[in-house]
Image (spheres, rainbow, N blue to C red):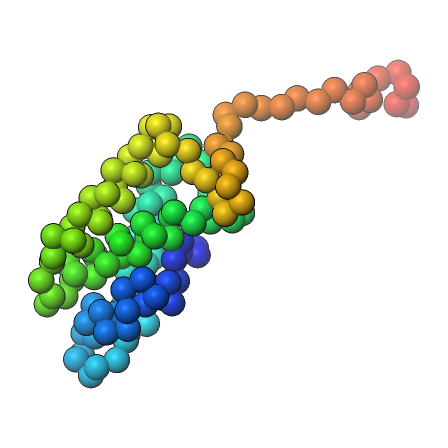
Length: 140
């Protein structure tokens, strides 16, 4: 599974210092890529739970999912660390979940990076008649 956001996306969004603070479990002053990737994967799994109406994985990830993925991952990282959970972090997480709930119930469509709506998965089955029956007098 590929996460909706990368470690680089998270660092660009929140800065290197915050990425260190969020991931440095051994307190050696460096970013732990493993810790960040686990949080991004967990955030992606949470997002996928709301996207049942879509065929996953996406051909191209809708850009808004990247932003919500890093905000959800940041929330998870704060929960698992010694850092204080700020109101800003909680608000960003709650906004992401509200957005995903609205996507799940069809109130908001997902838009890809070309500004087109991502097609929903369909329960319809297409039948095709090729007028070429396997069991016919013509096929002896």
